[in-house]
Image (cartoon, rainbow, N blue to C red; front, side, top):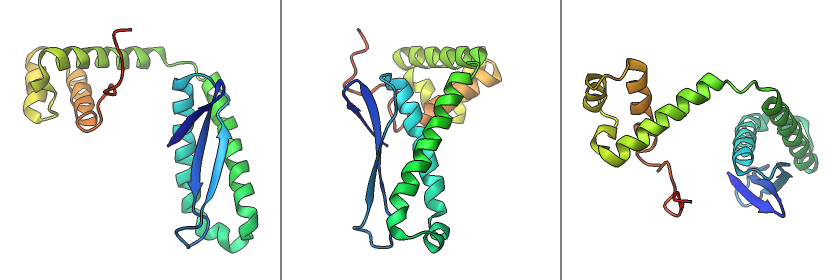
Length: 164
């Protein structure tokens, strides 16, 4: 995902390979219409998913659409997808309970990461120890899933200043 700031607004860009020649590509850039980094990442991720889905349809489109029309077609499709994502973000009720549970799992994850990182190796043994410590099956499962997710991708980037 290529996300960058241009003035106060975040933009998304992506290379589209519209031909079978690897060196031929078209760059698509779209304003995400937000200054919020969180919203921008969410919208960019949605556009990346849409791009993957569109690229799967590429062989069908190439038979029915002229090559010079493809960049414009994709740009319009991404703009429509972005509009759909923005409307979904505005109309989503927020799922407060899900967000609360998610935040609680991360709070517990960071506490264990600081105090007992061995419990966060994602293994069955660490899962069972979490259960023995009184965590519910769902909570232990969620912590194990977070541990597996963050084995290779740290939850906080190395350059972050979390002290404020």
